[in-house]
Length: 147
Image 1 (cartoon, rainbow, N blue to C red):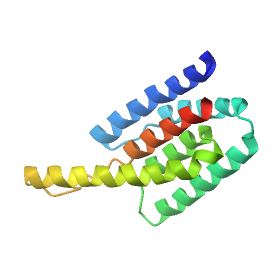
Image 2: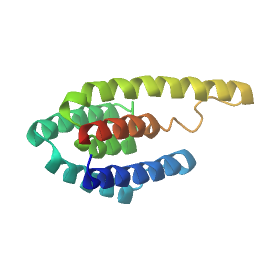
Image 3: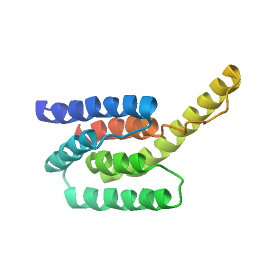
Image 4: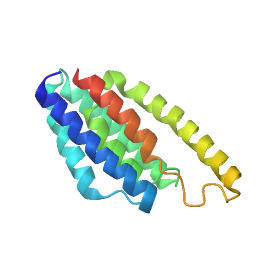
């Protein structure tokens, strides 16, 4: 991995961490962080062997998650994050990235449920910050796509 690729990944990392904070604390995903990730992901397409295939698959994933948003399964911020971050994920890693999101999301839901039982609070009262599994999986496979 060269310095440019590392700078692209580091830029995404910082912005995803800021999104995590805002989503956990305020349940908001700010557009300025998404815009920076979008630009970074587009720039990463310059370093991929098949940018058109990667773009096609990432747009397909975005459309699938957009449909999930329409039927109130995921939030709008989650859809925007997956749409921007997954532009930088190579098409060969896309399925693994989505499966990883599901696995990490399941672990997150279990931990949140156990914490609510322990604290004797209503589980998922404020929703589930699903940007966390999306961000972790997206960052990992974004990194794998750059090396």
